[in-house]
Length: 98
Image (cartoon, rainbow, N blue to C red):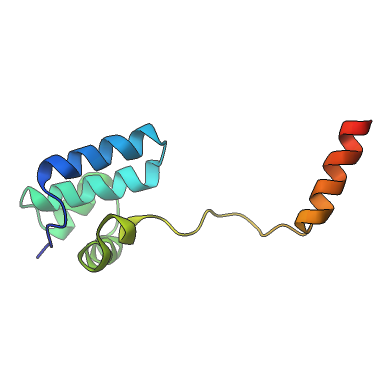
């Protein structure tokens, strides 16, 4: 079962806005939800966007609990920086001064 937090038209707008903002991971997740809106099972909707069954279940759960904000990726990836913001500013200043 999928909670319809948005109307189909609002969901299409959310997909278009995410595409314009270059949020490709969110677009994929919203397309998954759109497939659920169209009556596909979680498995079918996941297969359509190329994700596994456990991922489909997780996406459906976070959509039902939190809507678009629930689907928004929270981790940007990558290793945390070793430099503090002050150190980074100092390096940028040194490089700019030559």
